[in-house]
Amino acid sequence: MVWIKSLEGSYVNESNILSITFDNKCNSFVAVVGYKEARLQHKIFQNRALDNILAGDRPKSENEIIEEMIEYIEKAKRESSPFILDFDKLINA
Image (cartoon, rainbow, N blue to C red; front, top):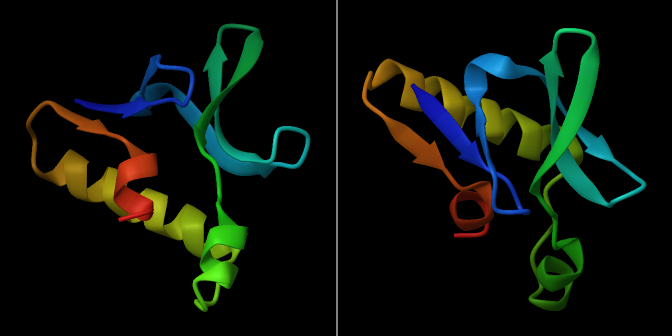
């Protein structure tokens, strides 16, 4: 079972995630979770592109970040052990 830590300090089970997308309103990547007839968004990563630019690095595109998140989730599922993903630590490392 894989859990994803949100920026608000809650945890989202990957099996409940319908999609991962970028929300311009909150300037964050969100996991869209579906429960019966309701849809909730959990902020799971905030891109710090300005930090990369100031450091002289090319910031990753939204698609590159989402693909990296998917790779981390799929890798954690294959390991078949309880796992918690904190994208703020993994992607900014």
